[in-house]
Image (cartoon, rainbow, N blue to C red):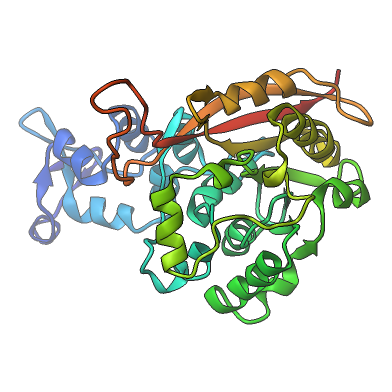
Length: 356
């Protein structure tokens, strides 16, 4: 049997099954373009029989164990990629405008500290953002550190977190969380600051951070929660508010005042700490104040987009992702009189620091 200019022996034939090109592509899980390039580069031998092309299964299986095949299937990180450690294959699905919330579940052993907080968010969801907007070893800032979801996401994914938290209770729990849920001593790799972020951010040098991600207080939403939610948390000895501290933005009575502090004293200062070309991701949800629908996410976009940053530069909106919370229970709000939404998603507002 002819193989180019070589002859396939009977012993070779006994070791191999001959398959068509389509079958070979299926085995290799390659596109036609990639498969043809493999053949053209001489990585697989064409066997001609009765004028048709065939390939040896043994040779295909041997090729699948090589680094060349692994790189072909998984992709390689483009040397020009200064944003993250993703290959082109991994990058593409991250450009979707939505993703599903992913958590461990309330009964998971590693969710016991997280659920103590009245408004936690999943370290896995934050890890999703951290992995796209940074490389390993880069610095990540969270001005509302809570119980350390961002810090845990950074530890698990090899980034360095600076976490600022006003409440001494949540601050201590965030450190404990890394020590108990990840590994002993892991909290020492990160910077945990117990203080008011409006004050502590001023101490962080300009252009020293690679990414900012956080979920801020949604004004006084915890003070206006559905009574059933409050009763359930109280019955389980769980907190229903961030804190009683007057510096807590969740305790600011006026929405316009809350928004002004959040924008000018927090997010624009966070932007100041970012290096040029770096990103900030703000995870928020809209909410209701009695009968009024508050479009929190659009208010933040309006206040932050194209705003000058102290020390230089400007923030520009790059897009919004929708974080779908498909696991939440439906409640009969408004029934049977009026439309009242079950808000089962959050917005991830993505801004970039650019030069004017």
